[in-house]
Length: 554
Image (cartoon, rainbow, N blue to C red; front, side):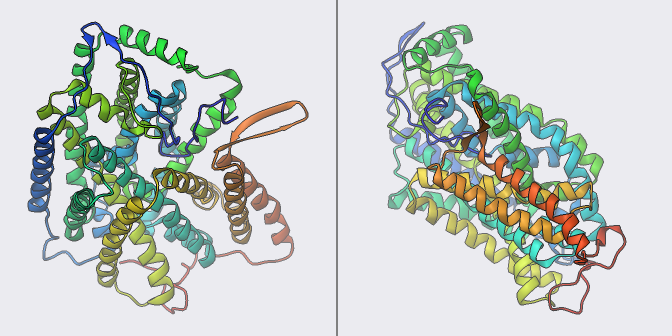
């Protein structure tokens, strides 16, 4: 199965972490002749560094502290006071879901394996209807009951401290590798500039970038991220227009590019279509990845921050525009193949940076690289904030300091957010890229296992809280085991007799999760095991563990 789908591993959630083994290709000849390598030098380095420095200084200068009459509160710092309008919500959702590594990995996947990269577009197109169905309902419940995180919701909905803790820990463990990959994406841009990210200078640049934006959000929280999201949208849009113009003028028309790329791909046994035998893997990857994306804490954080459910729905209608942009980036991977771009083995993510080097003069390459580096910071910061809130509200306050005030929660949350960002940089520097990808594969399997307790419970309270906990435990164990035993290949063959089909591991683990929860629920009810009180239906709200105080946020 692994060879049929191309060398590498199909990723669960963030599109294109396939462990690509890029191919060394013969030189390409476009309509204007051979494309000579543009090696670049100090000009592109200086311009990229200057561009990044200007953006960082502008971000620091624009960082605003909350007004003096606003009392510190988690809903103010982490959710922007639940006041994001349609435009801000759309920019935040797009800027958080479509990460920097996405824009590097998808064209790298097209470059290395061909048509399988189109699964990324299918997956992102599925997000809009799924968000419409799930997140407005969750946002309304969160606003009514003062909830900040998914684990808050699980505790109030199911009246279960263990299930809430499981949700919080899963969110943190699954998101950390995702954050590390944002650093890897930025490191790929630095590597294209000739700056080794594992060297002293590379580490210093990475640290400066992420520290700057972490400091920007320290006083303003999500409101600062909302301002950064506009900058990211402008930078990505400008980069798309410029690189598309370069591609079409230097290589040729889209038809000519596809013709060149098709010939080179065919010579390597590569196709831009999907083999029929792989359809089940393709479909389950797309659907499972879309469901998993909605369970990541950074996406839920942005949804909770919208002004109303109608605002969230309106913002979601514009998400396909982000998918169209991603489609253009996928085209750049085809253009890199047509242009005969060369990358070292195992570094397909360098296809687009290498294409920029081939097509753009030094000064323009520096601007494009600077834009890509800055654009990767928004999702990283939001991820760090969401993990910090899970830790503070559902671990620190729940088990260590149940009498903490909202002001104290905000003060404590700022520290872990910085520590998480620093830890992501350290992990990215110490780990091999493939190890980071493998951990992210596990993260995608893990995060999907909270779907029954979070998403399914939005529509039914039938499942018993202990059945949900045991189903979650089986899903985590089985998903981890299947992925590890298969060498981190994300699809496995299942079937009966002669009928077999490749299926995404996370979907199999989720099916086992739901099956256990469904089988144990009537059994636990028959045994008289008490259910938790549903605080969202007017019941008594579950108090903080070990505290006499009710879980109420004023």
